[in-house]
Image 1 (tube, rainbow, N blue to C red):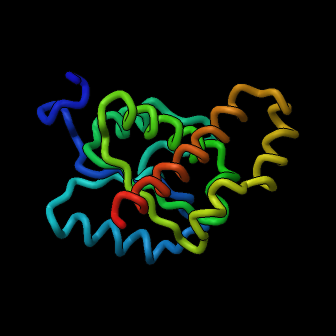
Image 2 (image 1 turned 90 degrees about the vertical axis):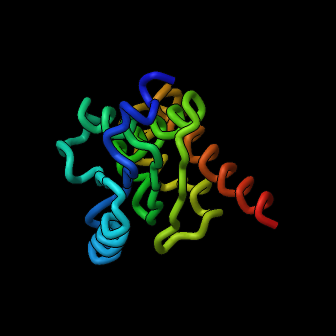
Image 3 (image 1 turned 135 degrees about the horizontal axis):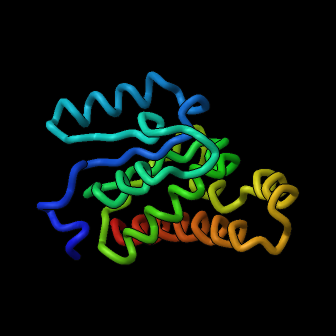
Length: 154
């Protein structure tokens, strides 16, 4: 696990969120609280924006010990957020990165049911798009991860 060994980590925490739809005061307060506790924190909108996920964003995910995914009502509408989620879950599976989910204005069960968002993506990418299937799988995996964490804590 050379690429994610503690000596190669640049960040303690990577925050993934749909910035303008998630209360900026919530995100700012969360980031400030994490940094107050001496956590080196990076948030996705501090990196290069655009519809495509940038190499700097991928590196930030890879160089983080923990990823916090902040699911909001519009998270699944943003293709970049979905690509981030895919990468975070891939890194969790390959290297054991810790993933924490926060549900902001959305219930955990709603993460699985993103029909409207996927209807929009389907029009753009096509019904049989590999991206579409990868994103849907990632949302289902994130929901299953949440369910598993609940069962483990009971």
